[in-house]
Image (cartoon, rainbow, N blue to C red):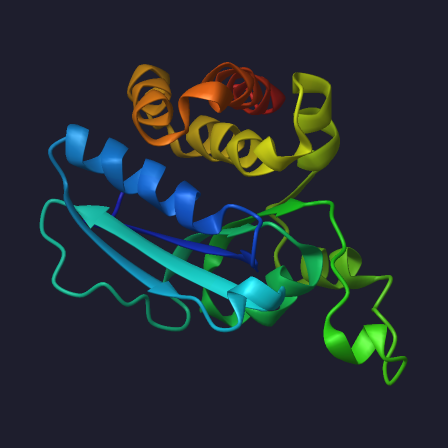
Length: 195
């Protein structure tokens, strides 16, 4: 990233690992001697509601909040959440989306339909959109819940974050029984998009 501060907006629903993802990124940024600020909005996370995390790092970061139109990367763990937060992305930003659908309450109740062309609409607005089947890749690694770490691997590859520090952060922050699966998920994510 060429600007002084890198802004990464992480969005998903409760239980998808957005908070762990932000902690991994913040840990790596600290290891790289950056100033880091993190802001978390949990909402109704325990009931499948939106979870939004903002990670900002650079030489000096004064605020934990990313303004609309400033995010360098929007990392979305679910397609509809990507669309909801798209206006926070800067004009030449990147969207990384897990190809997963989580129906919100209005869809589950039958009041509205989930937009099936949502990724096409996002790509119309943001040409630099990457759709990743992170849940399937994580399942192949041994646990579909590691989809967030697959996405962390993709993010590390496109943002040029150091793999060794990322793996060390995963080892420090993931429960011991899940470390091997998560390390494999990270490596798979890194390999999707070449450096």
